[in-house]
Length: 112
Image 1 (cartoon, rainbow, N blue to C red):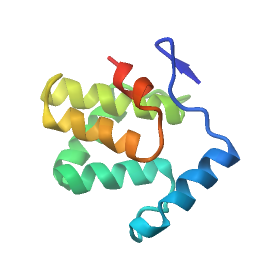
Image 2: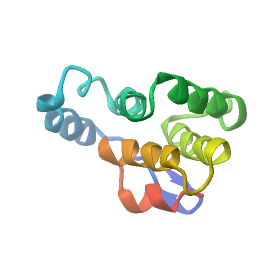
Image 3: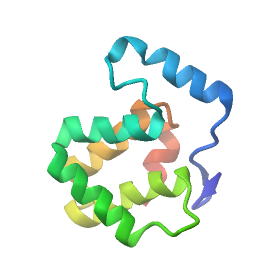
Image 4: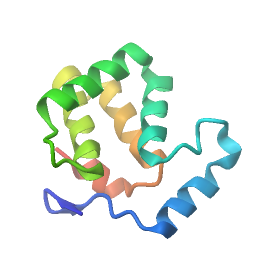
């Protein structure tokens, strides 16, 4: 999928196999799928209250009924930026979480 001119998420069976296979050794919550895994990583880094604020802001401001995984990725990044600022530790944690589940760093870093 293309968002803001960047390929952010294009899931294939091979992508999911690679992500989940590589994460087996990381613990019980690492193999729950890329979207849930990113939320877990955000919660571990920032705490569940901050994670909840980011996801609620994402739901309220950045997702529509037709939204898919790409819009969730973009929405969480934009919500963290709105709530905490463009140079915040929270924004960095959200970006790092998406990179940590296997999304392309260049695409994640390009989301404004």
